[in-house]
Figure 1 (tube, rainbow over the protein chains, first blue to last red):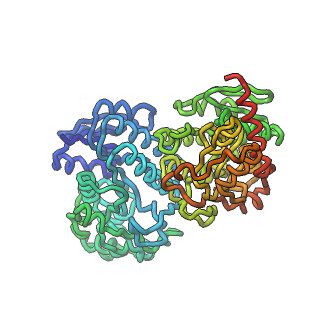
Figure 2 (cartoon, rainbow over the protein chains, first blue to last red; figure 1 turned 90 degrees about the vertical axis):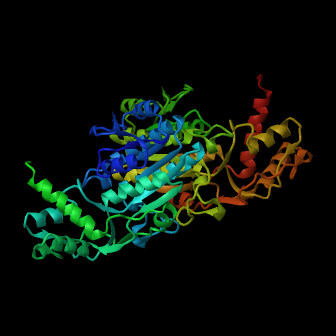
Figure 3 (cartoon, chains in turn yellow, brown; figure 1 turned 120 degrees about the vertical axis):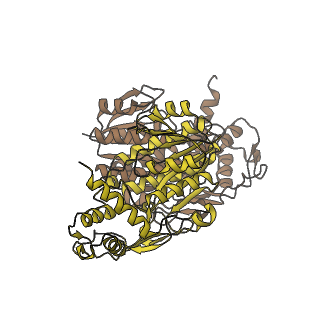
Length: 302
Length: 302
């Protein structure tokens, strides 16, 4: 019997993993500070930053699998927040409680910010890690601890490094969400020059990839990306075309953030060949779903 | 006023830092699970692995300086102990409480095991890190977290990477202690081939170096070593000569541990030039002090 505990289950990615976990035959237990009861899921309300809370949940659930997505993720703050360090401690507590409770397979969310992003094209086996902010430092340190701790406790562990996500429930100030909202409201969408190359993946695909990774026996760091490089400007142009308002797009109207890497894209050989997973949504389809979702949100009473 | 909190103050190195700290003008507060009251030192008995205990001590002491030596160090176990991971969490708690209490300067104990020891000669600025055991993984992850956390909290932080230590109170099964004890008891001292090159430093010198580092404004990783490469066989031969029992030394009588690096020595430019510190004890003098200490120990009633 496969019984999974999902942390951060009410978050941007967390809410998307529940359905594919059920579809893959897991008994699904979800933990979050703010429980969001849903059919077929056993919810456990807990703040994993509180000492002892991970152990209480793990002793009660005794899952065979762990999908650890919880972390501090406040938009505009998480890159340099002190909370990143607290999540290292909390994650170590969680892993210990998982192993003590007999857990066998764990997947946790990492980030492209672990890499030395000056390399641009990020390959798990050769690109050096050299994070440039607190979020990346803490995730990268946690990955090294995760790998070694899983190995010593006989837990099979994989670390899914997320690249650029978009989709429903994204913070409205983030790129795709903010461009989509402006276009749908027939306002100008001001962007930077837009030549930065990125790997964009719809959040439902990212979630499905993490579930496929959990269901595999692949260990270590695995990039979670589409494997398709696309410029930020191209993403914005496609959104504008899909929204039928190409004239509202103002590329170059904003300065590009200082220090932003020109290229940050994922090597996806491990994900495609070892895990055997490929995205379901192409970029146009993913952006269309996202526009549809925001159109509905903007219609709802506030 | 300089007020320092020393963690691990009753340990192998900790007990040696108290006198030089007093001599350097610090008001000295010591924390340890087992308090060892001594003149001029304010002791605080606490187990830093207990949630909340670091905060209680830091709020009471409010030190300007922190010298963090506490860690799991059980001989024969610490390389692969689960406790290493718990000490990462406890160290993060300690640092947070130190910064919250207004602390300004922190030095913590790192290890040569953070390096990819296949490189042999370890230079802080160029030798890659790639720890090969739980102790090294946890110390190396902690160093990255320490550097970034100190920077974001405005704490000046340095990380003293210790190489090979010897001296009073060393575990009797470790190299220098075990050879010294065998020789003093007129028993055969069986060693491996002894050609491995190492950097040996008397623990009183290591402690003095850490205090000098604390008193400096040097930040980041700094090797704590003598800068003198010596073979393990040469250390054993000198001990045997100093003890007057060269015939008791059996080099090659034991197999060398598998996977032991042939060379593991410290670049000491940062320590010598930036910190401006050099060892007080040469190897012969340090070994003589150690023999004298063991001779006295072996005479004492058990």
